Length: 140
Image (cartoon, rainbow, N blue to C red; front, side, top):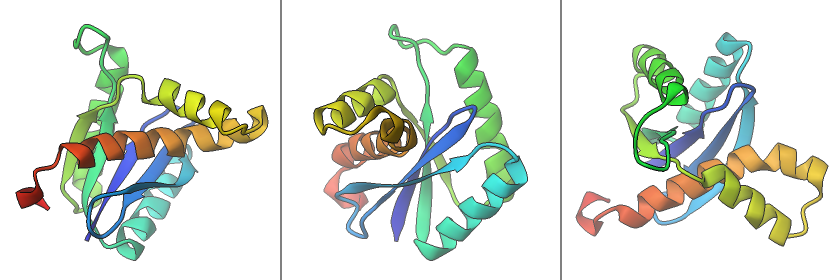
């Protein structure tokens, strides 16, 4: 069983998935946020295909640890997912994942146009890897 991470965005949702041993996160794809029914449909396909046991959703926080307006949107998104997908959901601090993803892609000489397509799924992979790194071996 795997863990699937979602980097929530207004336009695109970055998707990453763990390996079966829950040690390595891999960027998978991005899914357009709208129309939302199409997003949910694609997400459900991925959940089945990848045999996902947990969905990890990035929770945006301010640098001081507080929650802002973006966090409220993610909370609403998570509430809809809980009613729809039938897989446990957990939120995880996503501070600076998009900035890290951009730096990573720039360092890899990824052109600007390609970065726009890859940044969301790369941010989801960074989010997921931070979660995986924090897992106790007994939790795996």
